[in-house]
Length: 395
Image (cartoon, rainbow, N blue to C red; front, top):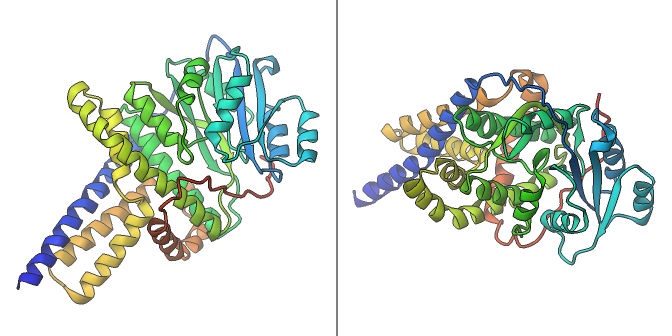
């Protein structure tokens, strides 16, 4: 009897923990449905941009990305493309220097994106209005800078563009693309619908140049520098908007090996920044009413969506086979809610046969996420590079 009581108590504790996270996500999903269509006025002024592209061992993709970045439908004299070359091949450097862009070579014993950006800031003159950050595999739509310029002119400290999949060539890439769009709906559309700052992605984002340079000087993140940035900004009341129709195309991981490495890095960063921020976020919530900062830290408490889905499916199945009590009904209800949340968050255009086929590989993805969770210790002490392949030209 005592064993059953303890077992039920543990179920209740676990159910409360998972349930809070699930209903929080459902709330964001519903809020995202009601975000008003953005109407951004044309800016009276065209600002200057520094377009930073940190490239660590990205010889396969950087040439086409850099060339494409120079072709923006924006006055040429108002933006510079800066490639931060970290361990690129000599022949790649030569070809980059032949283009109409700036090449900054760096060499670190332990490379990170934040180190590359800070070195570039150190060497460049402060002549720009905004800093735009891309990944080495990112392709901007032709009017991307123009749209960000309009968005930044509305009084925001920064803006996050709409990052979407560039490639859907494998089932893993499709699952990664769906995951990105779910995050866009929950943490960018949902946050902005509630008047909160948009979550950052790490690329396709732009900020006021001089203040951002000062912020980056204090960022030493090995992984998840975007998480540290958004915590810093929300703590100080700096708002970031989500420009939904400004598209930047991002290469999705194409193999389960890269998927596993990437998620291990993300999970490690999530728990590290939870530990660093939650105490101060809770304090600011009650002393300054800073819900934006608390919300950002609070998001780090819960398991990622895929792990929530996998955990609940296994718990419900176990309960159905061995328990069949009221807990079975409750676990089934939570599983239904997380499924509903994810279904709401996936864009209608992704409901097709290819996505359905990719879902068949979801159990393997869930298993790899569990493995990443177990083996993530130390993952944020070493830079884990995600290899990128050949770039597809934007259409």
